[in-house]
Image (cartoon, rainbow, N blue to C red):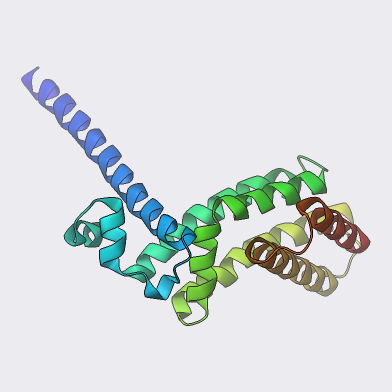
Length: 201
């Protein structure tokens, strides 16, 4: 009986520790995003500044992240989950509203704009982040090609892959640039993208 009580206490402690670790990690990620949203370039934001913004010590930062690359990849994972969740119903044929899917992805880009800024910047000079960014697009490309294949099995595979590649990269660049320096409204951009997607699929 004493053994089971001890195991129960240990399990509760482990659960509490996991929650604390997750909370601290999210606090550090949020601190980095706050600094990015204030206009700082990711390369210029120091670990010390991130730790200070998160109200943690530098050793605490390094207890969660090996370096800034590790941090930006964690930001990327969080960003990717939101973006794919927004498009998942459309990609898996559970919904047919392309406009709603594109609006959802744009909103996920907007909500994670700081992370998006860090990823696109770091991808220009860090091969590991660049590989993550290509993989991010690839998962969308696979989903788009898969939906098109199910809708029309007679389409040539090479054609499907090329069109999915072009549409996904085009849409990401449109959203990224629109959030950085908008020249049209959200509605106008979404309508234009819907027409372009429908003209292809």
